Length: 431
View 1 (tube, rainbow, N blue to C red):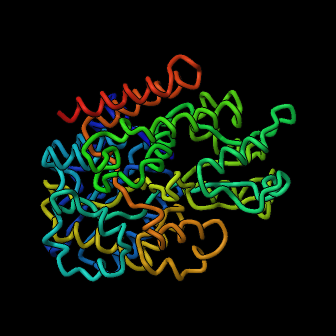
View 2: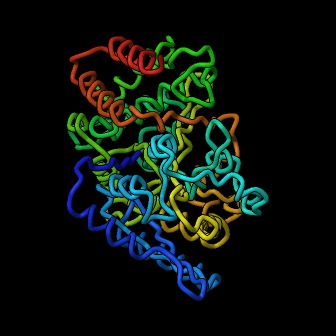
């Protein structure tokens, strides 16, 4: 999965943003309220889309104006944090599953639970979306706008040439098919392995699939027994399979591959399988190297039990605790989270949708999007489990786990040693 992490450095630019924003939020004599809205995962096309949605909102609510602030992506979360710390200058904001924990613990974001009681938007949402909107205490610090979730991107022509009639359904199937296709001498590789940035994402995905029957749905890094998933014997089976996938079916250079290299490896036609988020559908669709009838997607591969865990990542819209216009800010959150506004946002950004109506939308029912509908409609096979992304040490964990995986594929540590270290890490952090 692609993950964006906040920059650590604070600079002059952040101060300028804060100063500018504080002066623009407020209300006028005629009762018009101006909201400051801050996005986090910015890019020009996305910002233009949000501006269009805001224009629609303002037409429906002429007494509410919205000033959109779009900091550079790599610095956005740090700047939003500064705004929240100052207690002013932000009303509605983008909240991610990696930021909701620290921001809510510090009392910087507003619990919208009471404001959204009776909101008709809840009825239109999928079970996953409603669940993701509440924390363990039932508080609503953000309403998700969509999900990032893994599926298997695969080459239809290459698996047929290798003698397989359908895409892999399990991790063992994936290893078998990828190994059969793998032929480095012809620059044809089986699997786009992730050994660089955020390598831990796919590694934990296979571990969670192997312990699916025993996993704690409320915390994807725990078993029902309370122990970590890394302590389970099945976790060792998972990591040994994962290491084989690198050794027997992946290009050697993938030891350092992150998101761009993985996607490029599939898009340029050199690798047969890729685990990625739905946003990649748009990228692969534009490929000049592989035609539309040469690829598709399949649901995320399962573990030995036939089940798997869909480690959904999400983000959404929330309200600052320090906002003086919470009623209007919540109204904007509601608008963005329902109807055409929500549908436009998820389609344009290639996100797994939050609305039930997507299951009947031709856009999602056919082609590469259909695997996501299959997973959503079969929650007993594709388990909805929350990962502990909101813990204060998540960024530290990502760095440690990524480094450990690279050591494993380079032969500097074993799967058993890696898992023992991860078990100790999470056990001690939670004491």
